[in-house]
Length: 112
Length: 112
Image (cartoon, rainbow over all chains, first blue to last red; front, side):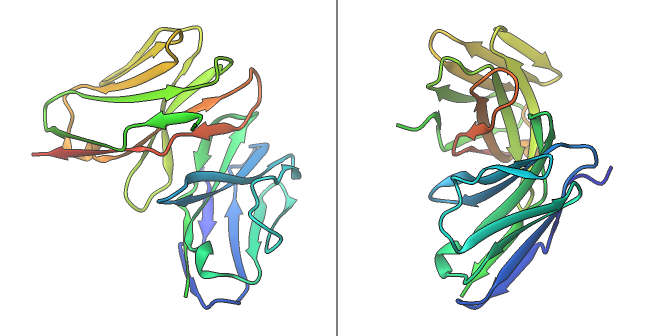
């Protein structure tokens, strides 16, 4: 298995633009997580899905952030409009029944 | 205070042992994990321990758990320059499925 695949690896965008981050979890995994990593806050859980259904989105910072999982092999995290304070590394992770997450390599987002 | 706390930085010489410490607050934690993050990469699961265990050894890695003090440690024997990375402690709060809570990570620097 290729592991959790995230794209793009790097994204630089201007403030106010829409940003879409993508994730392909490991086949057969039933949980998918979106995390954000910054120096100040460390790893923050934004949202997670179980069998494609969002379970807890209490970590989503504000309405500018949205996430979808239309099927078991694909998820997106969208920021619209983006702001400089959204600059961070965004990780997707998946797991089977919640034990031992496998992380993707992350998307480094820079909003200028 | 933080749910999971770690010291931020540790520096050792190649060949020495490294000990990375972690404290957590939730006595109901059932699984405790150590993840490694190399520069520009996602988090990689190194090892984990069930809360009913005191110790787990896996090659150069030894995990010690003091449940009474809610203290977890990761010992790396014969530390190599390739072990330089950020190490994250994480806990899951309930039996069965739950999300992981991560510490802010300990940066390990191994000098030749």
